[in-house]
Length: 522
Image 1 (cartoon, rainbow, N blue to C red):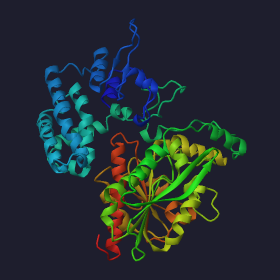
Image 2: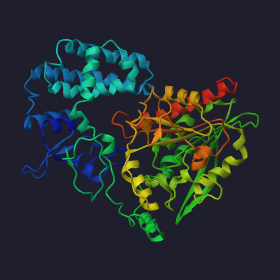
Image 3: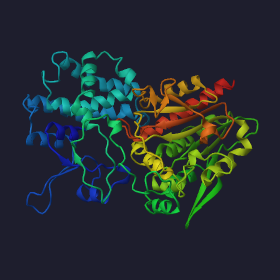
């Protein structure tokens, strides 16, 4: 964030290559072997190697040294650097522990927050005197520190805005509405070898960031207005490639649970020369007298936290409910799509619209067969999903092209939300989950129409679909409590760990609510 802000305030342009750290391209590692972002490779200066700057603060300083039209460096640089030093060396330490308190059990999250507030109190005193940290104009100190205060606030927004720092809160709100900040927040597609050149900042008008990842005017496969035939599906399939390993990332994690849970292969998918075992995890002491909780993830293979959130829940909390529920977890329903980070299976079929009789999706048919013997004993079914920026840039345009329909751009909801069953709504249950998840990540607001993806927001962070009518995974049991979670992993304020934690928080809250509502101790 600091690097982008520096480029923008310096009114420079750079070639941008957006990187997904879980899939680092070789070209990036060749430039910067340490494998972190941001990395700025400068133009050749006549030496054998092109200079590289690998720290956001250094990129910010370098950019402003080249051009500083708003005079961000004209303030007391000694005071500015001292303040940024304190941010980087002191505040960031406590911020990281506040964000990930579960990894640092030495102190509580509250104690970590209080340690971080020592720096916030110093900022509050400065802002009580001026509009910005070192005067009435923006300085490099504001730009260098704001992104970290923003992260602190986003750990728990309600808590942050209840703290006695009105000047700091007003300062942050002003930044969140600043046109340069909004331009820095624009999302770009991850770079791949052969992609067209992307210039940042572009000359595109500063639109809402959720509208920036629109698809090309026509999808590169098929003829607009004509549904795909076998030739188009074959062309689509030829473009799919392995990007990660189901065996190394999922099957190995399931194998590690065998000592504490029963693990079974409930089916197998064969796509060409590849064969994928479908795995389920059960409570070790399964009892026919107990209600069943069903957790499913990875119905859409590209929705990573659905898979790893389910596995993390089993590992961290599955045994907590022993003797009170039977737990059945299918963490990766679509392994072929998981490996290719895609929504569809190899036949260009969406498994999450295929949970019905005589399903053409082997993933869906196998899961329904697994669940059939206990479908009427399930008290809770939670289907773990994500909504990503690629929904708007790739998957919805591909769907429109496949079906020969026009693509109508929409908005990606910025945050976590839930999908309730319009045929059996459970508003109190859904809100119990929202309350739990907002301790981990932010909840998606409604758009200007009061909707999320074209559906009315019927309560904070909740929309409704007719689950059975649409053939969605969450419809496969007669559970009184069911929901589809939707994590937003592309937010600049969340990490993959937070996405997994949000899924875990939702599952735990769902089980606790279902047990309490069923008259069983949670």
